[in-house]
Image (cartoon, rainbow, N blue to C red):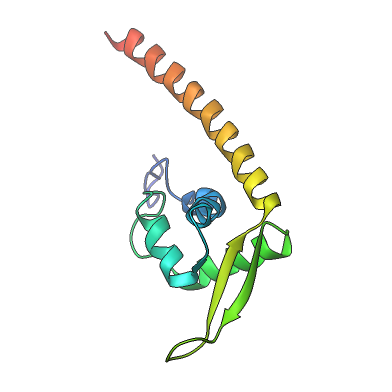
Length: 121
């Protein structure tokens, strides 16, 4: 290893990869607002450490621009208005595509791990 360079962990820089499908899954059970979604996706384990709200809202805006979610302002109750996000039909279809992709990835990872186990035993 070159002097001054540290080894990178394989998961570094990949935190955002599954943010969008995580948000779609978080909305699958019903409408939600941003901070509530942050709590939901944190539980999925794709993000290590604190979840930056700016990153989440950037992804939500992109999902809305892509027609995968819609939003409206909720002005009911006390306190400031909250933007409530909803999964669209296109979002449900995209989530299914993500699940298919993840299933394929899972199969590849299992094959890799099985091969590794065979080689080191």
